[in-house]
Amino acid sequence: MTTRKLPMRNLVRHPGRTASLTALIAFLALSLFAGSVIVVSLNSGLHSLENRLGADLIVVPATSRGKIDPEKIYLQGTTGYYYMSASKLEEIRSMEGVAQASGQVFLASLRADCCSMPIQVIGFDPETDFTIRPWIGERLKTDLGKMEVVAGSRVSAGVNEIIRIYGQPCLVTARLDESGTGLDTAVYCNMETIAELLSAAREMNHELKIDGDPAGVVSAIYVKAAPGEAERLAGKISQTRSPKVTVIRTRTVTSDVERSLDGVAHTIAVLIVCVWLLDLVLLTAAFLLLGGERRREFAVLRMLGISRRGLAGVALKEAALVSFFGGLIGIFLGLLILLPFSGLIEQTLGLPFLRPEWPVMLALCVSSLAAVCLVGPAAALIPARKLSRADTGVIMREGT
Amino acid sequence: MELVACGLDRRFRRNTGDGNFFEAVHRVDLTLRGGEMTVLTGRSGSGKTTLMTMLAGLLPPSDGTVTLDGKDIYSLPDTELSRLRARRFAVIPQGNAALSSMTVMENILFPAALAGLDPPVRQAGTLMERLGILRLKEVWPGELSGGELRRMSVARALAAGTDFVFADEPTADLDDENTILTLEILKEAARTGKAVFVVTHEREAADYADVLLRMDAGKLITI
Image 1 (cartoon, chains in turn red, orange):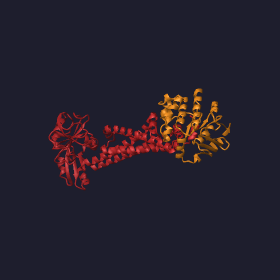
Image 2 (spheres, helix red, strand yellow):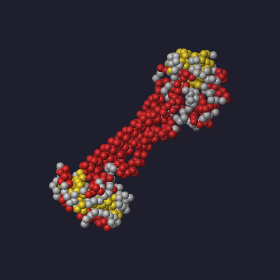
Image 3 (tube, chains in turn purple, yellow):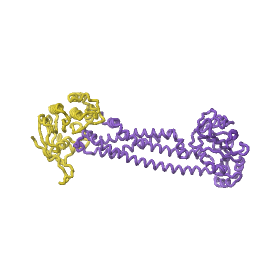
Image 4 (cartoon, helix red, strand yellow):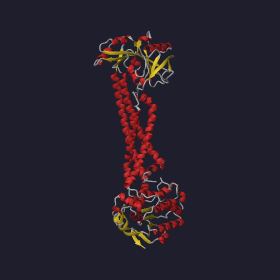
């Protein structure tokens, strides 16, 4: 046995003491790591949302506002269905200041063979689309045919599998990367397929408010305005009638999200700081209490010839080892919570949530571990100094 | 080889009313020589342990010096004094002085590791056998009785091969047979050239003393 091996042996031989300290530090690491991952994921989610919304304006039937918040479809995957005549698309397309306009049709499936949760079916026109096509283009080898769909990352159906939507078999031709938004729980098809699915839904008594041919409706119109025209165009479209429409400015959606995200990130940051301060105080108190309990043990080491510096080294090395293992456990627990429950976290926060790529996750793991490995010994600094300065002769005189 | 204490004084802060100081040791002059067993007796609270801890380099005196090889040990920086303690001093303190994270054998070999010496496995084995604790070499200190712990402390102090051995009530928890055995082993250590300093209440210890001293109210009296 040497002084180099002594700290590890002290930890192993006192499992109760070691476990309490490790748990305290694991909690510290968990709060820091999980908090950081959540903040980074929310930022990534917002970034992904901004990249993928693509349009400046989204036009939906005014009646949809009361029934469902269309913003939630993009942010949280809330399913819904509302329709207006496709002639509105032509009307908007012909307006001055419109650079591009494309319609999309939504259909909420309450149950599909593939999924345990309702999925949103989104029909788009590949000819005019500029919001979905650029995003799924790299995954899609050929154009989508009739009754062919592209599945979002959280739809549990593989490529070349058949899923049934309202009893209609649809072939999955591709799967998309995770976006961290509600778009992940949707499947995408062309207008021909969505019209077929709308008819099937209507036949199955699904309450769809469609007058006439399902092929002649759209749920939302995505508009890209000419530079500097978005504001004016939004006002102009809002004033149109038959049907009356609501214009959603995507910039407003993202800045609303950004505001909520700032709030959440701020709250998380404050919580992390509070947890850290509390934990630091608790850790220092724990090390001080342990130091008091171990006064005689350390006095014996001094008596045997270990220097003050050597003694402080033993105490600090113990703290560093506990911090390292506690940090590893905390980060492992963080991964255990974050990996399977990121969907639930997204749902609870109501914000786009895109877990960082593995290199970023690794960097967060390493930095959280490094922070914890610094904080543990820092908390042990005062007790270690106190112990090493204690008068050995006086402690030894105290007997047992 | 001599350890010379000159004018040693040690005061402790205590609420006594008269100056708030309690003088545990008062102007003690003493020399410990290699090959001699010095036995110090006296009533409880007479300052015996305080004097021993000062001689062993563990408690700086309020006044006076402790000199080894012409150097005042308390003038040395902590790292040097610690090294000196590891290499030349061994202490058997009162009470339990075992390191709970080490087995009995590891406890006994640890001082040599601290001094940077090869582990004295053979000496340790011989001493443990004589003291009747060889069968306990892989046992943790928490499983030992008071008497076994005391014998472990004796073995640890003697196996280290230091020049000076300071023993504070080394026979406190021992039966008569082990008391005699421990005193004999300490006497043998003195015969091999070590300077052995024993603080005790044990009357039998006087029979083994080359120098017999008594302490009374912090003052040293040669008998």
